[in-house]
Length: 154
Image (cartoon, rainbow, N blue to C red):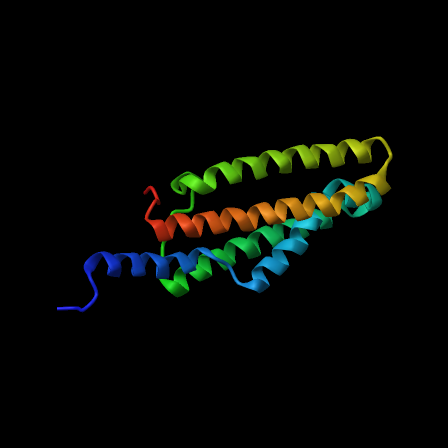
């Protein structure tokens, strides 16, 4: 019989499982760069209207690389965590706020570019990307906390 009580073993297993909800620093660095590129789509399209088709292919490649990283991590570790945000109760609220900020920010950047204020849109882009990035990191942290506390809904 083990020296550690069963409930402590379960809590320890949940804490170990929660580490798989996080991503590496390399992923977050590349995600930050991709976020600035994606949030600035209206700005880049206004500067480079003739290369719009190639820019869309770059965005497709970024999305596919992100999905491939996630699938590879799941396959490598063997850990299958729920992918829908509704499975993580404390992360859901943060995710909704970040989604609302993202939609409002992109709409605002489109409006600025549409009115010919590209410089103002460029100035607004960096804080917008930083807020969205911080929200994504916070969402992942909340997901980790939910896994460690055993609050994940299947």
